[in-house]
Length: 210
Image (cartoon, rainbow, N blue to C red; front, side, top):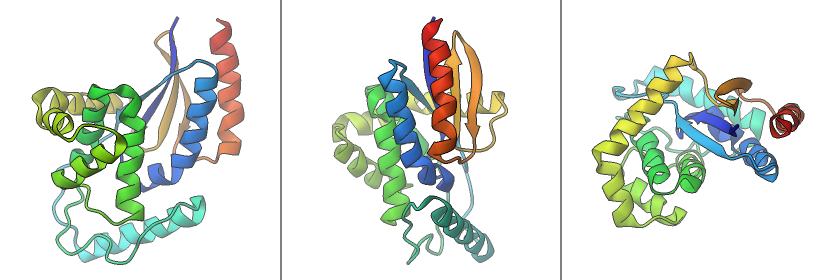
């Protein structure tokens, strides 16, 4: 009976960026028990128009709250420039492409994208930026670009969006504990490691004993 963690996230979700160190620790905890992790893309904002000034101000205010709550670094200078289209589909598809090439690189790719966007202020809606980040993550530029543009990756990305919507997941980060195709919710939304590690430990004890 297979067990795994399922992490539902979006690389351009600020709370997912805030959650990254917690997720690193949870993945290590699960891996030590022999339990793998599968990453699912949530599709936070897709097909959006350029941000208006009011929306931009609200998003930046939200980022300040995430920074204060989690300690993760954000670059606010020149963030979300005029005309920026906050479309998370390209970044999600980039993670899906990495996952199709090597599932072990899905989380490193997602983490690198979030770091580039939030900490470094890079525009990860641009394909050239995505290819650069993929290369730094350990992927071949050519192989990644082919996977990113391929119809199979586009469908895999949309399938992730549909799957998370079918479970009623509307907030990220979400971590599910799956055993024998049955899901238990570890968290929907940011929680500190001190809250989640004991919960995961109890689930791992039960899952690995069955």
